[in-house]
Length: 245
Image 1 (cartoon, one colour):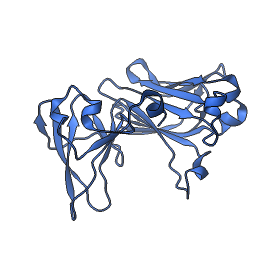
Image 2 (cartoon, rainbow, N blue to C red):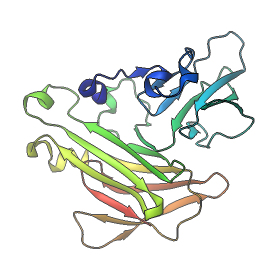
Image 3 (cartoon, helix red, strand yellow):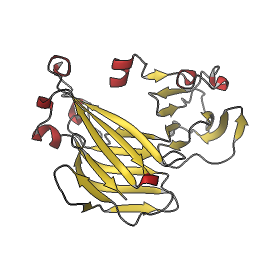
Image 4 (cartoon, rainbow, N blue to C red):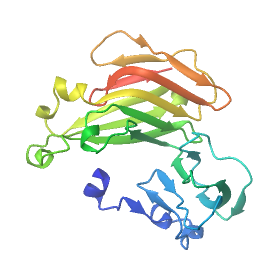
């Protein structure tokens, strides 16, 4: 929504809006993008158990539920590929674009206001070059101080496994008053999930602005799914840090 506010690009986008150089997507009107990183295929037919999703070949895609890269029977058409996926009553097909970092809050609450101080989980979907980037906009979620006093922060996440960067956070703030110890403690990252990791790293070290020494991170890696999970890294989205391989 922050990107929509500063760029004018809608939150919900047609496929051709994000991929104007892929003519095969011009007529696609039964799937859409949320921002630039999430592809949604609504189930609109009664009793449907499968759906056909068309993916642009310029990017790779991961199922948000299984966190697996899309594989299987494919039908190519120009610069797109179509795949038939499961979409029964318990499944809405949603896919994250390879090369993106999507922050999410996973604790279910009765309202979004109650989620305000909940921790983040970062979902890192590596592309074919083992890179990804994304951003997270933060303000008090209540007042207009982000406009009146420039009280906001933007975390920019980047990952480049070929250069031994598991993930890095750079922070831009509207004003220095926007950052204090309470603001940092309210924007904790509790988990980092990396999809498409080709091999288990020997170690992951955390370097932060608050320390001159590296801290070894505990992580889990599943070779069959190529998913790596860093649990409780103890970092804030409003602090600059780097996790190196």
